[in-house]
Length: 295
Image 1 (tube, rainbow, N blue to C red):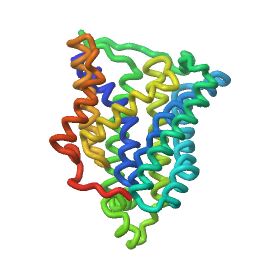
Image 2 (cartoon, rainbow, N blue to C red):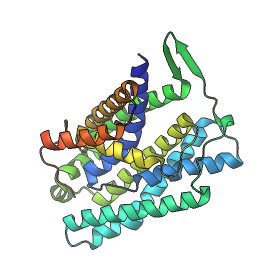
Image 3 (tube, helix red, strand yellow):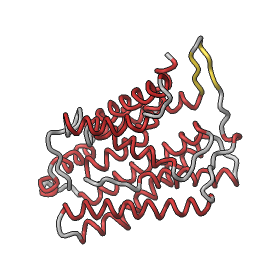
Image 4 (tube, one colour):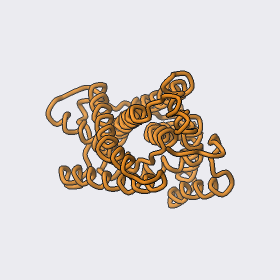
């Protein structure tokens, strides 16, 4: 049972980080490699506020979410939209966005590293007291419970939003055929900004909760999460909320079993091994479409 608690916690952390990336990649066709730096900047913003003002956990999380959403929107407006507007074709635009995302990621991380001198930073203990509950052989902390519940709520809300709201259906239409969606009057630019805002907010949420869970993070802590998220999205299928959930749970289960029953040196190999296996057997992922058109 303790393994299940650990799997649920790890899968929820992966999910909070990956679901925003999946929405952006699957709907507006942007593989945003700056997502990790948005995570780091959001957590750092929470740290800066707590250094000056004592706040409980909810306002701190809200600050991280707002900073992440604002930063991600700014990246879309300042970097990605100009690239899309100036590129000669979509293939060129996709490559340039990848490179541009790396550049934005490096610049934002450099700012955080300069401010922290690359040292770990965390939230003050007064903002939230970690308590651990024990039932028999099962141990779980209050922050783990929060992460699991928030992860489940976010996944459910995202799935319902994509399937039942007009905006979600419009995003799905863009992900399937952007040209036809544009002819039907769907405004891609407005929806792209909205999707990036949501993804950034989720990165900020993940940054805040992971910092509380670990006690402290580094500016580069999200780089490992970026690889895990990429593996989970490929495994589940680009753009599928259910696929991301299955991908994150599968990845978390495999890694937890490796950590529990071995020395743990194969954890990274598990992520890349799953990517390779899925690409060979089912390139579109478990819940992915046979063909995904990127706008």
